[in-house]
Length: 316
Image 1: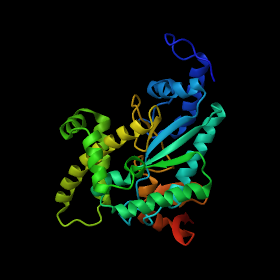
Image 2: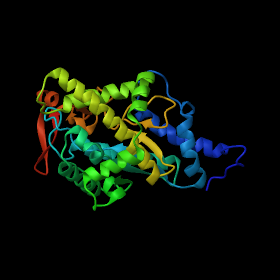
Image 3: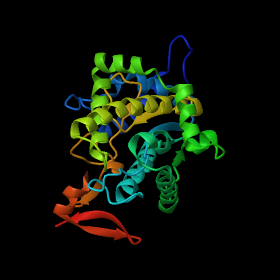
Image 4: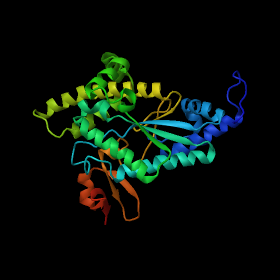
């Protein structure tokens, strides 16, 4: 255990140094909209505070990462319904990141992937059985790759198998979701919340595979659903906090400095909002892997199969 000083004097110099070193391992992968500025650990006091307790106790650091919900329903973006090379590389990255943390904090770290597909399925137009298949394949991929520092957590761990998915979502809404009007007000007044709303609206618009109406009607529908996604996202975050108190909260969305959440970039992508489940992987001749929409990757590369299923594209 690393020694610390009295409660009145705060963490010891050793604890602060280890916390800064842990945060320094994360900073090169920070997902943000303000990346033009130089990052330094002291610019993230909320994250340093989150690290202080496990570091002082000599305990493993627990990261929670809401995400990995399901594949986009838009076939122009993804290769299919199940995890592919994008998820495989992202999972390997997260496991390796925990190993790098262990180099500066020997008790190490774990990432709990808080798979949130069932939280949003009625809003994003993906059937619940498809989400089950994705989550089960994600767990199988973690086992097959030997990624021992990763776990998966979803609504099944919260409510078991005795309730319908609709009933589970109703409980999440009733117990943890913020009021819609307060969220609308925050979207108007807070820049980062407004950017999140705009990003989710764009994703919903792009992911809608079939809509019996005009383009403007679809845009209105996506704006409505975007608020639903944001309410559920906030509720899921609160539920994750209840089940994993004191964890260091990672996010797949860009996060500003000062946020309680730390945005993490899983793979290279030209768009800071792009994720493995909204895209596919293109491998360049130099070995670099990049996320992009399937329609773009098909123009640049040839498909590669893994275990009989499309996995990614190789350029050249």
